[in-house]
Every structure is written in C-alpha cells, then in structure tokens.
Amino acid sequence: MSALVQSRPPAMRRIPRGIGTLLRTEIRIFLRDPGSVFFTLAFPVLVLLGVGFAIPGMNEIITEPGPLQGYPTVVVMLPAVLATAVATPALTAMPVVIVTYREQGVLTRLSTTPMPPAGVLGVHLAIGVSLFLVALAVALGVGASAFGFPVPGHPVATVVAIVLGSVAVFGLGLVVAARVAKGSTAQGIGMLVYFPMLFFAGLWTPGPIMPDAVAAVATWTPLGAMSQAVDEAWFTGEVPWLQFAVLAGYAVVTYAVAVRLFRWR
Image 1 (tube, rainbow, N blue to C red):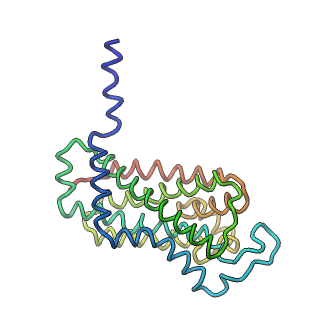
Image 2 (cartoon, rainbow, N blue to C red; image 1 turned 90 degrees about the vertical axis):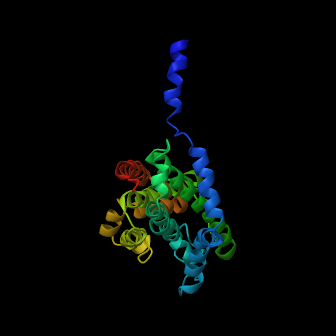
Image 3 (cartoon, rainbow, N blue to C red; image 1 turned 180 degrees about the horizontal axis):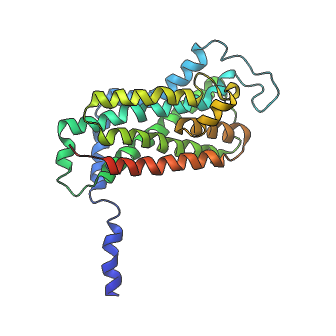
C-alpha cells in the first residue's frame, strides 16, 4: 500500500505544477486587449465573407453534377479558407507573443518557477487552438446564413480534421517561437512559412483544379493535409486516413521539437 502511495506523485507531476495559474493569467492578458479579441474572433468571418462577396464568381451556383451541385462556388473554397484562418494566428500572431515575452524578460522570470518549457508552450497551444475553434464556429454560423453551406458528409471526421489540423499548424508556430530572440524576426520567419502554406492549402489554386503533382506534395504539408482532409470529410463523407496520419505526425513532432529547442532567454 505504501509503495502505491509513493508511486502516485511522480505520475501526477506529468501535469506541470502551476499550469492552471499560467493558463488563467494568459487568458486574462488576452481578454484585456480588445483589439486582439476582436481580430481573433472576427478574422475567420472576414476572410469567409471577403472570399464569398469580393471575389467575382463566388456567388454563382454550381451546376455540374456532384455533391456540391446547387451550392454557391464559395463552398469550393471553404477548406482553403479554414486553413487560412488557422494559419494566420498560428504562424504570425502566437509566435510573436511568446518571443516578445522572451524579449521583455517574462520567460526569464518564469524560468525561476517549476514551470517547464512544455507547460509554457502547452498553455499557448491550448489557448490558440481553443480561440480558433470558437472563432471558426462563429464564422461557419455566419457563412451558413450568408451562403448556405452543405451539411458535412462525415461530421466526426470533419471535426477531427479541423482540430488535428489546428494543432499541427500551431505546432509549427511553436517551433518558430521556441528559439527566436526577437519579435520582428519571429514575424518574418512566420510570414516565410505562411505564404507557401497557403499555396498548398489551395487558396489560389482550389483543390478541384490543383495539378495532381502539386496536390501530392500538398498532402505532406500541414495546411495542405488539413485542407484536403476537410474537403474529403465534408464533401464526400470519406475518412481521410492518410491526411489524418500526416497531421498527427506534425502535431507530435513539432511540439516535441519546440520543447527541445525552447530557450528562456
């Protein structure tokens, strides 16, 4: 009995001490900035409405036989728009926040506490993904009212594609944030990753017209795999196992690499 009691504390310490306090503090800091709150929650809606109303032809009804017949053309862009909506905060906003903490000495002060790098990165990952999912729910509600989206063919697989894709893309942002010393550098590196990722997600060349060779490469990129997984799960009702495996791999590897590379100063 005594041996069992002694074995419990190490297992419980897998969750870093103080993680709840750090999580609540970061949420309060975020909520104190109305600009960040508005941009985070409104950005996916603005992207969706911008693509739907500003790009010519997006309101035209699809007449070709298939699962999207009768819906506006903007529906074809939905997977790419979702990928764009997650890439923006994950690659351009979240890394700058963490690196700015490093510049201001906040991370140095945190290094004197029992909080490990995995706890710091995990808190920012949880907040980033959660906020994106809330913003996405708002965007899909507004978009469904404006354009009339079809019901996902496989709702569970669609949700898994979105959540897994979000974690994978935010993982890339964590790798950038783990090592860079200045916020401006983090922003620059994030943008270098951001635009190629949007290309593979199909923002400029939607999935149905993307060349096979490019689509094959896109499958092995985080945003490309996410866009393809959402497209397949939502519009065909199939479970995109290959894309799920790619996204899970990115989620695990990027987080592990970020923890390994993380520096406090």
